[in-house]
Image (tube, rainbow, N blue to C red; front, side, top):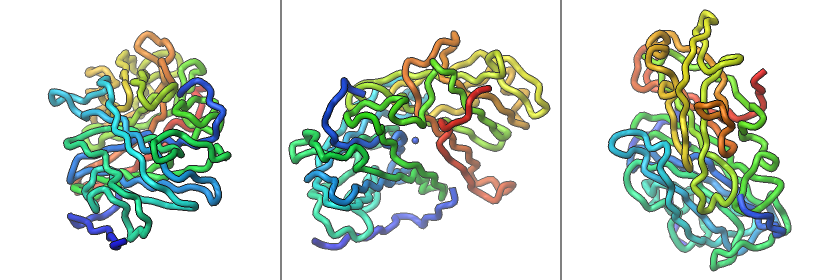
Length: 330
């Protein structure tokens, strides 16, 4: 097979988003945040499987939607499905560009295995998505590999134009292996019924952008458009704290369908935001809707904070990490 190489189109630097119980053990992993916008933004995905615990093929299922509709963030739009099957191998590692910018979406880094096709999403324009990968046969049917943690993965979201990147690990529900992901099996998601709020700080909005990548998880993620909600809270009421510790009431919430990237500024009343514009502040981000009711589904939540081409902070810098980890509200 002809070797393929990772040849950047631009000079890059990397400083800087289930079902009824199934008794089979075909593993399924979830990449909660996929972002593409050729040729400026892409997500590189790596998938690997354990020795002796693989199938002949893997099925890849993208659930994606346009990032913007009418120039506004598409938080509550539904996702559509792009699905295909590719061969896999024992102890295999495959890395690919979901946008197709690098090597047309084919396997990267001189991978000598035959995968018989590209791994790219195959849709143009700015899009957000999540990706499911599962053990399958050549027809895409899930198969039993007798190991419910056979698959693993990592991803890096790259802003090629700005020279920025951040990464994540794939989520694996250890309690079930279909296309359902729940709190008990994943752990690193937040749900409203337990008031699993996470502390969140944000820098001056005048200089820095703080974005929350939210993907509701639950039943039938292969086709369902799951809903979720987030609200910023103080100790006992909706709102945020400034740097002096003064609480300011704010009633705005963010609703999400399928997956979305929500700027923290969108979750703060305009008058309160004006008072925090040059300072920033902090709050708990809670999986609750505007009325205080629990989010319809648990949420996998990532925080990204970044500044672009700002000489005060040395140019372009960012930081991204999983926010939905252990850190109870109080």
